[in-house]
Image 1 (cartoon, rainbow, N blue to C red):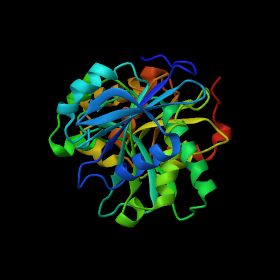
Image 2: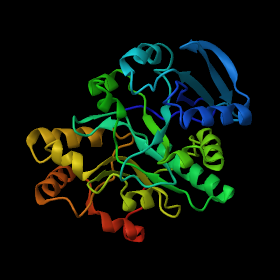
Image 3: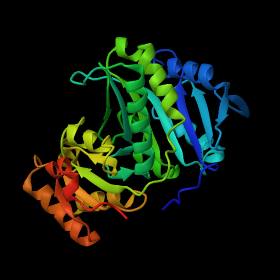
Image 4: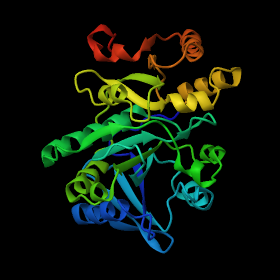
Length: 317
């Protein structure tokens, strides 16, 4: 398990694909980052593009890496570069676009990276995801773009859909996120949303706060109850890996092998898990697996509706 470093020593890396046809959001966000923070060259280049760096007033470092392809689409090619220069980083994140036939529009999203079907999960630090989500929400409100929403997504990795081997994720054990704007061209190119995202990147390292870390199981890809918990400013919910119903079913999480996948997801969460929360829509065999893991870890197993009444939960100490 990775130890969280104090202020002034933390390091984050953001990927921006600038290759034609894949740069819907990332190129615009990168250009805004340069405008806002005037980052300096690091002496490292990828695909002929220098990696830039911004150091904030606390001494935390934020590196911005451009490449011709999405890192997730050609992970096997970019992996040696990541391992050579960034293995000791606290966060890596791909700035990307979101789309889909049934995807909600006017959204700014964050999700952890992993292949739920295969049971492979990158390390998750709930505080980083919470820091980004809350920074985005504050910037969204400040920008007065009320038609946009900040939301979580289910854990996934787009590399899987491009023939990349999810087992390779274990070769870069840095907490990894996807950060996206969705889900139509007008949203991808919205200048206010682009600026909200750019400003939020350098606020990922929020002040340390003990969170109520959860493993979330079930529900749909954009599960509202988990998003609302992650954005709750009154109770310190720690949301990271979210295992949606479709992939726990296809990944056979009701089996013994599936239980090992469920355990792997829980054990990948930095700081441990304070509760396992399942959506009441999942079928009985999956609920039983959740209860089994909760008993093994000595943590409560909650229905998702319990998140609506955080006052009934025990705050972390």
